[in-house]
Length: 195
Image 1 (spheres, helix red, strand yellow):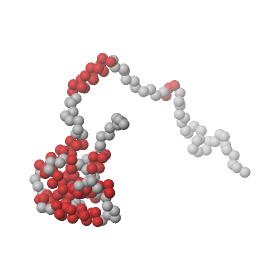
Image 2 (cartoon, helix red, strand yellow):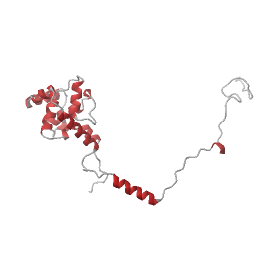
Image 3 (spheres, helix red, strand yellow):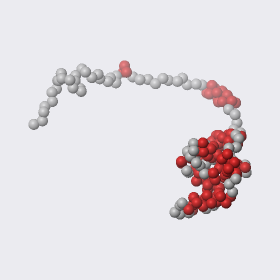
Image 4 (cartoon, helix red, strand yellow):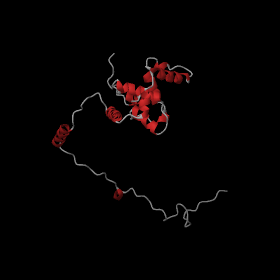
């Protein structure tokens, strides 16, 4: 037979009478949001004019803030004195770079079909981008990432630095930005394409 419940208990229990306060949802406990007075349209229009007058016009629509930051990083890397690693990288020949890439390709079971139209230099840089043992590649110039990995004794490939120096000498700032970074921060058009 099941135990009966006691209706008026004075024992210590989780819901003993008088020991637990009740929550009141009455008129006295009403919470009111602070209200903000509505401004006149004239004040809004004058504020908008001030904001337009203060905000500078964009210098160029083609550069994003990430691209500007990467360009600054590249300029800082270019202005510092050459390291021994950079001097060694300048001595690496094209044949050594191709041999390095051929060894990387031989490690794979199948060829990279999706990169058929890409140059060897770009393939090497993309492989470096996706090598997580050298640290994150988003938001940092490739040269700075290579130097950081080298300073941390992670032994990044000298061929990557060779490719980066050659691209820099050709004046290509695009090669300093990781391909993944370009994909993640690409500008998508919201306008439907005409058919």
